[in-house]
Length: 93
Image 1 (cartoon, one colour):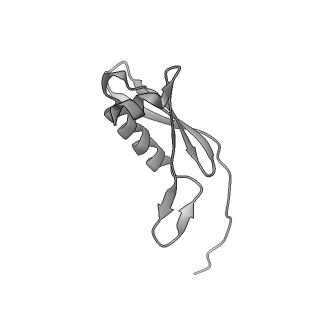
Image 2: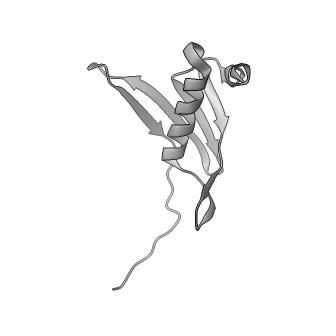
Image 3: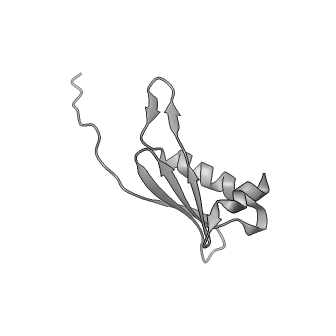
C-alpha cells in the first residue's frame, strides 16, 4: 500500500531491499538495472511524496539511486555504489 512505501522513506531518502535471480545462473550479488527499476517503481508508487534518492540493499552491498533533472528538463537516473571484480577469465577460440 502507499502507506508502506511512505514508511520506507526516512529523512528524504527511500530505503528498499532487493534480491536478484538471473535465469540460468541463480541468485546474483547485484543488478544495477534492477536497482534503478526498483527505485523508480517505488518512487512512482509513493506518488507526490516519493523521494528522488533511494538506497537499494542487495546481497553485494548498498547501491544509491538518484533521480536528477538536467538543465534541459530531462530526468536522469544516477546509480552509484561499490564495484568489485568477481571473475576473471580468458576465452580462446
